[in-house]
Image (cartoon, rainbow, N blue to C red; front, side, top):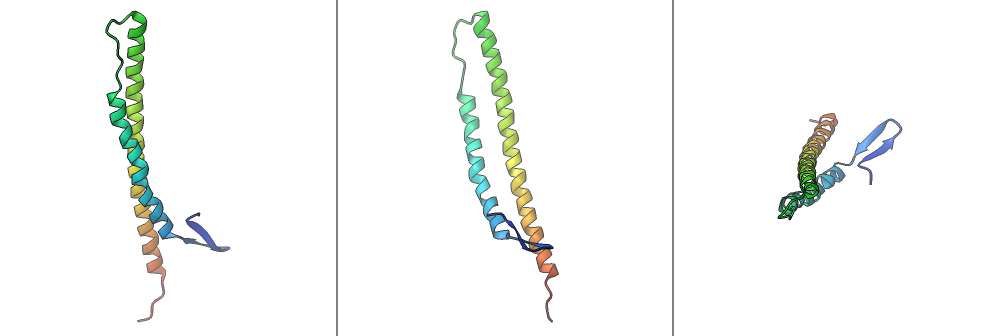
Length: 105
């Protein structure tokens, strides 16, 4: 279900509960990324007598591992930023709707 549901030709209705639900799922999605880091660190190149070929493979592996770790960390940072942005969106929409509500005193 789309959280931005049109309620008329010139307006939209924001389903804040749907946004909150999407936000609540992000920690579980990020947990899988958290599990990747220790698994990557525990992988090693097992070779006791390097030849020039296996030495170059070991160097390449180390570079790939470093690149992968950086990418996983970037994705974890992106997930945290999306969580913060969703929190801000939900709060902003709620505040805007509250401010736009006509009340009788």
